[in-house]
Length: 205
Image 1: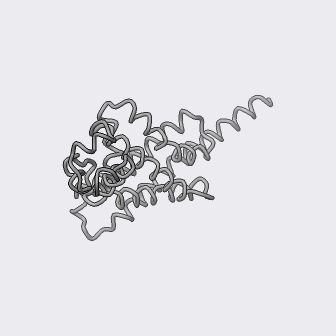
Image 2: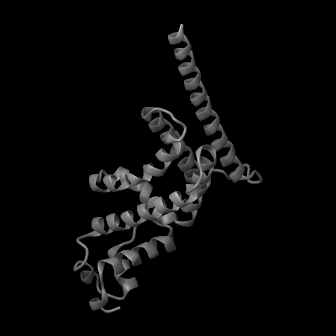
Image 3: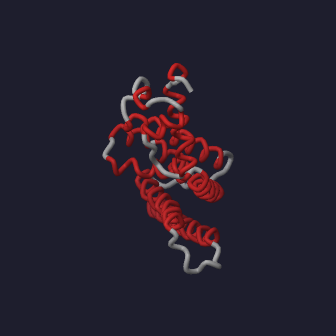
């Protein structure tokens, strides 16, 4: 490719392709220039530095993830939506390893702009859990638990820590974890409904 045909979009697209190929959350500008067939200084006509490139790829990853999750839960509610979200989350992480690793690494970099970009990551999970009628603060707690379960399985699988019981299906283990999550969530919802019913009965007396 000649430097004349180089644009920010082309650079970001190639960076995404590289991460998807290697499964790593970073790509050097030198390697990117080599893949594009240009000299490294040519990249600086379109991007300021590695940090800006990372943010652009991060923005792409966020948009792709959100669209993926929204499509998975479309037309579903409560338990069905939770299970669909969980399955789609795992699939995205496995199929887009480099992008997922980038998404998970951003908060540790103390990059306030990137953290702002990451807020849509919570959106679909919060909307799914809001369907259970819990107060906003409780939804905040439960979405943390939910995401921690999902990422925990991915991290353990990624590091190879499920090797011991190698004949036991990891997918079934994930299903058990999600069912435990739902059982706990239902218990809180039921408790809240009982408390409200008790308060109504007391007021009527």
